[in-house]
Each structure stands twice: as structure tokens, then as C-alpha cells.
Image (cartoon, rainbow, N blue to C red; front, side):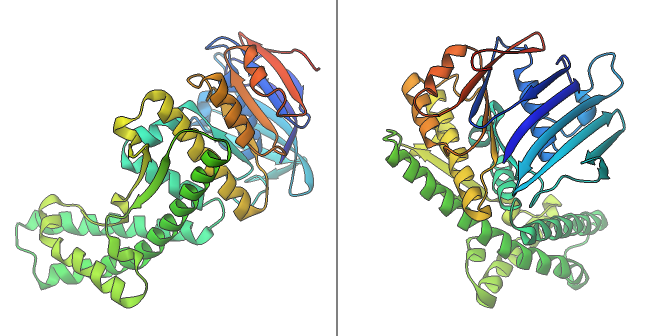
Length: 378
């Protein structure tokens, strides 16, 4: 994937500019609050059609402005095309090569550019739902069946909860009628849940393998492991016997679920555990170790996606080096695929030294008060 040009006509605090990008690394530097992250967000919007920061694109409209407007020229899967995006407070219009489209070209939404953001740290330190979302978003980049299973599972979960609340409102014990109402949704939860759990487990094994390979290849002194923790381990099994064992768990929890008015067992309660030097990153790692562990996890995700899609995405790095020393920065740079185009932000220009000797082309851009100015190599 190559982003060849980015035109910003109106977007957050950025002044209008037309940028030309060649292969290699493009480093955007400047003090905090100057617009570096806004620039990377604009690039991601043009490439993926979505923002990594917000689901409400109206937030990108500049103060006292009527709309955001972006354009980009890019090449993906051997096809070169131009994208024009206009965002109004309550609508969005997209054109590809001058023709109105509902979505951008690509295997799936989000696969053309992969982002590494400071907010990603919360994946390791936050609630289990964030780690489940990380796994599911990764899987949906190439697996449409996973999308369908997640949708069906979510629908059945909502429906079963509604039945539980209706039954609880009667004040009556769970009888044959209540069981009959729950069973159809439970079968969906079991069948779709089994597929979801098995895909997640396979992905975690692949991610853990890649993290270890990266750490070993670049002599990173951080023993890091990843383990998938299914809330219903029986769903990892194959066939009808595994489903019956998982069903028994649901049956045993029906009365508890009725009291709590929610489904208390299932893949919606699974977790991903990442350990650093034998202890959980979430509770025992330093902030620097947590950041390095998250970078290794994201690099592992990148490698898994590349292997699955046979495609090198655009890599967007937003200030991920701020808590890594120079040696760790160099190791991270070495671990990224050399053929990838990289857009990277940092507070200081001397971060460029981390890339020197590792990349053939490194271009610096200064971002100050929304103004983007090319530096060396332009």
C-alpha cells in the first residue's frame, strides 16, 4: 500500500496543504497540540475510510467551518486511484476516481492502513472488553464469517437478556415456559460462540508466536507471552460433545442469570492475557515495559495480517516511541517490514536518528500550529 499524495482542504486545526509522499518513512515532528495526530488521522481517513480516533466524523470539522474536505492518491493491490472525502455535520460523501461510492476499495474496511496509537496502551491495561475488541477487529480484516458470527451472537445475547428481564418481572421461578423461551437463543450463543472462540484462540497463538519471534530476532530482553482465556473452555473443543458440555454451563447458570437479568457465561466474557517476564502486564509491568509489549503485540498483528492477506499495509505510528530509549526505538524500527511505507509522529526531529541506517528513505516534516512544512529531503 502506498499513499502517494494527501490533500487537506479543511480538517481540524490543519491549514490547507497538498503533500506528496514517496516510499519509505515520513516523520512528522513538533510540540504537543500542533496537529501531528490530526495529520495522521487525515491520512487514515483517506486510506481506510474510517478514523482511528472517533466514530463521529463531524468532530473533524474545523471551528467556524462547514465541513472537512480531504483528498488522496494511493495504490493498493496493483490499482492506483484517487479518493475525495467531504464530511458535513450530518452526512459524508465519498468519491473514488470521481465516482460516488459508499466505501473504499479493499478486502475489508480497515485493512489498508494499520495504526499504532498511544491509546492502544489501554488494550493491555484496561478492561477485558478492549482486548476482545482487539482480537475481533483483527479477525474481521480477513474473515467475513467472523463478522457474521459476531453479529448473530450479539443479537442472540440481547434477545436472551430481554427474555430474562421479562421473566424476572413476573416474579415467578424459571419454569418450562421460560426454558422454552431461552433455548433458541442459547443454541445460537453456543454454535456461533464456538466458532468465535476457536478463531480467537488461533489468532492469539499466532500473535504469541510472532511476539516471541520478534523479541528473539532483535534481542529484546522482554520475555513476553500471550494466552487466550475463554470463559467457557469447552467451546475450544470440536463437535457435538463440546457443545453439550458448554450447554450444560448455560443450563446450570439459568437461575443465576434470571436473578442478575443477564447472561453470565460465554465468549462475551473472554480475555487475552499478556505476560511480561512471567507476570501480567496489566498489573506488574512498568509503563515503558507496557509500551514495548504493546508495540510487540501490534507488530505481531501487522505480521499476521500481512501473512493472511499477502499484502503490506500503510503503517501509521503516532508517538509510540516517547517512552522507549534509543536502543528500543532502533529495535522497533528494525522489526517493521522494510517494504512498508510509514507515517510517524514525534515531538523531536532527532527521532529521525532511530531510522537512519535502517531505511533507504527518511523524510522529515515539521508541524507547527497546523502548518505542515517539509524539511530535509524535499
